[in-house]
Length: 458
Image 1 (cartoon, helix red, strand yellow):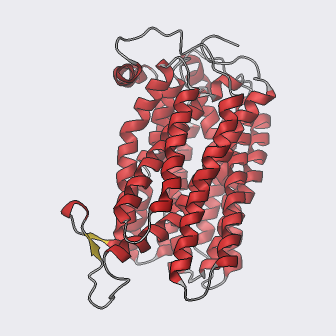
Image 2 (tube, helix red, strand yellow; image 1 turned 60 degrees about the vertical axis):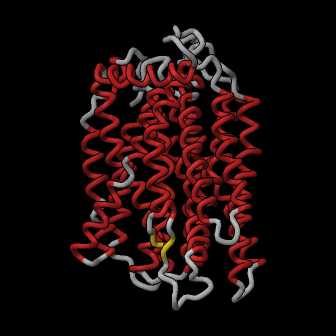
Image 3 (tube, helix red, strand yellow; image 1 turned 180 degrees about the vertical axis):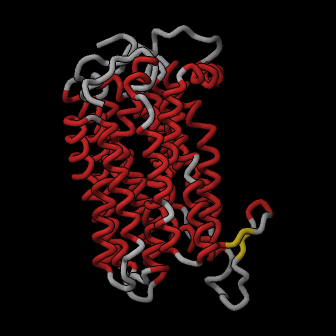
């Protein structure tokens, strides 16, 4: 192994498996909590706090956190926006700290267990405790992003340039599988134990489903903490003066200045920012499109989510295998072309028919995991040695911090046309522009510019 933290050989299987398992662990939070249960659960708690559950006729549907009037139905959306805003400031600092700390695993453990504990503490969000629920969500979501930055920074230590696409794709695939397994178990429990007309029981089942994701996250995080190895690259760095935390803030400023020396890396980040925003918008608004435009039942939407999860497992592996034959960038461009086809097909879906929507979900599942996994591994080639955490901090900002662009564009198109179909098909702009920009980035030259060895195929 190279001492700078960039591996030139393949890490042992045990270490790679440990890395995969963190994807398995944390995906439970994004699927069970974020995608399915937390939004409706916290909205119901907030409506109860507004008094709507007691007297719907006199209730104005408003809560007042810190004296600010907030519509109960908007509370969760505002929390998501606030957590994203805070995450934008936290992630680059976390990455800089990870690169300067002598050991990364304690940082991964601290972020992951903090997020998992906040998720488990949702067990105490009962009655009208909407403020507690909001605070716990913000802590969990920021911790989730911070842990991902540290987790991603291990990737260049696990393999040389020619093996990273395969490893990243396997990690992403296993993550989708883990998230899908827990979601399936929770949905079976909810369907088996719920009672018609018993809203409180439904709320309790949703709360314990959320708690189960925190337990899952914490339990499976133990595997990477045991099996991953520490690498000496970070420890060999000179200190800037002060403790690791203050060093992280100082190094963040150095990183921002230093990134200007690598304009081709920034060009890739710009392309990723655009096409990934399209991906995130499709994921976020697919359910709304299904309910509002296609008039589909909740059961059809839940089944589609499961289809996406399990097919994303196979899709990530398949596109990862394709990347070993033709290169990561070519494979990403193919995936973006498929995304163009998926969002275009959405425009023609018939109303009230779940099967075509599920087939569309299958298409999303096939291209979603691979396009994200290969973007992660391709970016690992564009990072100067020893700065993995710092650069992945900015990479995650391109993922989380800009995810308002697509929904804003979608909303504007809907406002102008009053059509969800026009809104969803308008997202082709993100895949088209992002793909064109990626095609024009000279990736091999960009890899050489940061001092890394290019893979045989790009």
